Image (cartoon, rainbow, N blue to C red; front, side, top):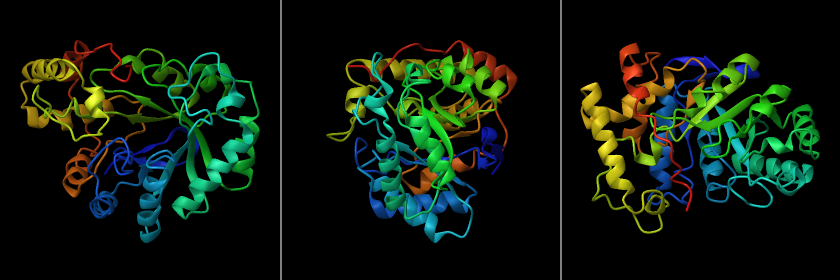
Length: 323
């Protein structure tokens, strides 16, 4: 496993991290706790040392599983989690004050709750689960973050940038108060390359990449006939003719690169890791098989320059999260 600096945090993190949304038993359907714990252990066995979870993933259930595994291991395994906005609005709408989303007492209370769920004394990276640059120099959230750092409850502070709004954190980055950002970046959504990544590199901010496989769209396994379990959020994400469109676009990618559909997950992850601004990428891994296949990509080798050039033409501007 290859390791990279997580910005100015002082942490060296595995380029393949563990995205723990899918094991929280909410939104993603089908996770079994025993299998999730086995997958987490296997990932750590393979050198993974960075796990990203959130208080909102199964109302703390994901955090509890992550904490159980981290406490059982002797290795240094870094945990990032997230504070849900008090108003429970995803993504952060414009015109909402910082005190409506992240008042200081809420920031501290949620952090304490996450620490109890995790069974840990310190959170390595505490993140806001949404962000709006309107909140820079507004409210008392920064006082809470600084207090949590002083008290040793958190080591570093980050934000999870609103879906498909990669530039809605650049103002925050320029203040110097944020240590990491988490953002959607994949073969389809290449927009963070335009302005966000240069800002992160300039200010030494760690970059955590989520949705690397487009919620399954870039795995090469979704066809027009794919059926998701009842209650699974992907029924909405891939509604209408979206499965057909994703299928067609993936076929064009495999044809351009002369690869098979089975090679799509590895190609998608290596595309992300080819960018020097990226610190780690956090695919979901609900099975030992997924942990094994994803972790083997973290070998420090990206895609060839020619392949990266070919993939530029597959940028696709759209927002599947919108209704």
